Length: 491
Image 1 (cartoon, rainbow, N blue to C red):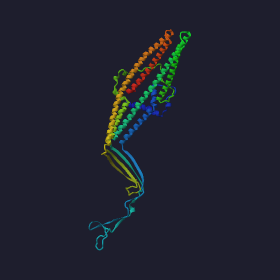
Image 2 (cartoon, rainbow, N blue to C red; image 1 turned 90 degrees about the vertical axis):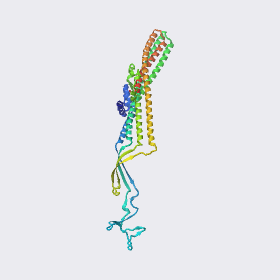
Image 3 (cartoon, one colour; image 1 turned 60 degrees about the vertical axis):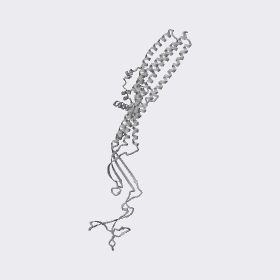
Image 4 (cartoon, rainbow, N blue to C red; image 1 turned 180 degrees about the horizontal axis):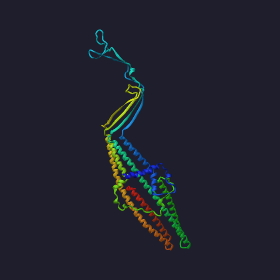
């Protein structure tokens, strides 16, 4: 894991600074680029990798966002409201009875109007009439609330959210690792594409030299035949046969030249350079394509530790992280069936305020409390959501197992193909020596007059085929080795 993150960090160190770099500034005209330089250019200029680096950065921000859910949140809310009417406690003026203290009864009593004849309290409409009342005008208890300002500062600290916060933090951690793993895998795909384009240029450059040598051979043969015609030992038909072959070889040389130009454009595109960039690759000027030493593992694929391959493969690592993410999503779904508890503190204020008789000034108070939410009955909705998340997790595990089987098959195929490429290269080496000797004997026999023009051209054709197959075989060994490293996760 530490090695993987180190590789990803190195990729990000290349990719992120290149965002401000234009491809035109990456290489000067006429430069000679090595394979390592082509890889670096591709890693720096590839738009998919730059996009992946931004996704890694975004995943890091999301992880920080999820961690913030552990901490208390502080919010402010405020507003203004205009009301059409005032608020009044009474609908009209009020008259309140008044009590006086009775010494005899040692208590307060209402002073009622009494009949002077009988001395009994007088009733009007069935109610006693007090002698004294307190007068409360309606306007005394009216309050102006036409313009109301209010606000509150709230502090919320989650205590228990059913495990949702813990699960979300794990999900964002896995998501960040997933983004890094996908970036690492994409970088390997880019490297493999660069290698294929690079060695295609080397191959066509070697075939260009080969085609030029073949044209020179036919040109020399055409000249010799013309001399022999003058001496009467060759016919005009021999000259025409050689010239037709020469014209065909020149056409093939033109095709190889065009293919070389297009292959350079393809390499420039993969490296993120303008397709008309003027550059050469370091290995195209080599006298011969040096064969790499094939790893001993090609001889016996039983030595491959598939568990280590599984651990190194970025695509399998991505699926493993996907399984873990879905497991945590199931925990999030389960949290919807569990109680939620949070502590809430607030300071609320208003103008006019209710603490000073609706005076037109700001005043407020502190309050603190706890909020508990317990799901009771949702007709199975939350439980079905949890079961769906569990089913998705099981499906992702099946995808992981299937991918491991496919990786196993892929590794075996790559191993066999690499071993086959080595054997093909060795065979073409043997054929190459035989073709060279056959051409030498044909030229010698032609000079001595014991072989015909057709024999020489057959030997030249066989020589061309042997050298071309040898070039293809040597390049194929390179590509098979890179592909094997890719499927083994060691690229």
